[in-house]
Image 1 (cartoon, helix red, strand yellow):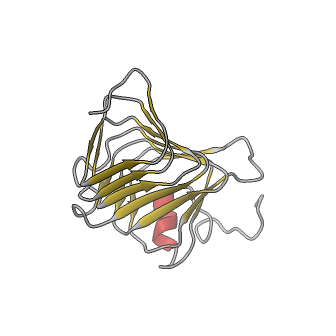
Image 2: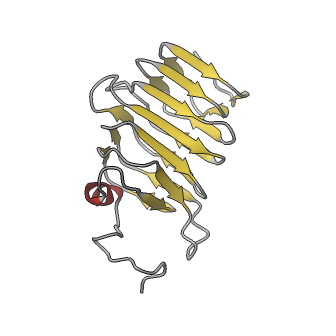
Length: 178
């Protein structure tokens, strides 16, 4: 049964993010509900901010985990509306220094893999109000890194970019920032 109403599997409801990304039109809206999503994801569409949310029929799933590698092929913004976001693998640009990644919301965003290790992002931005966990050992951009929320280092982390700013407290959990 369709718990939300009006959903048709393969048309406007998908089991994985890449299938949904392939179907949504440029300028459209993609909503990712709580759960774990395997497979690589190529953020290849110019979309409205991608909504990270809790499905009201499964309120316990308050975390979206993308376990596959993520490639940023368009400037992309994630808005954590009612669910937190974890990138469970690497996050890279499709071509070094050409695309930006922004994560907004009052919840936690976690990067467990390196960011920009193979292909650096143009920039990485998180807004105030939430928390960011950097656990992949490195974040590399060709431009700015702006962390508007509290940052926790889950591993010894090297930040490489032209302008790296923290607008809130930085938490070091037995690790060091180089």
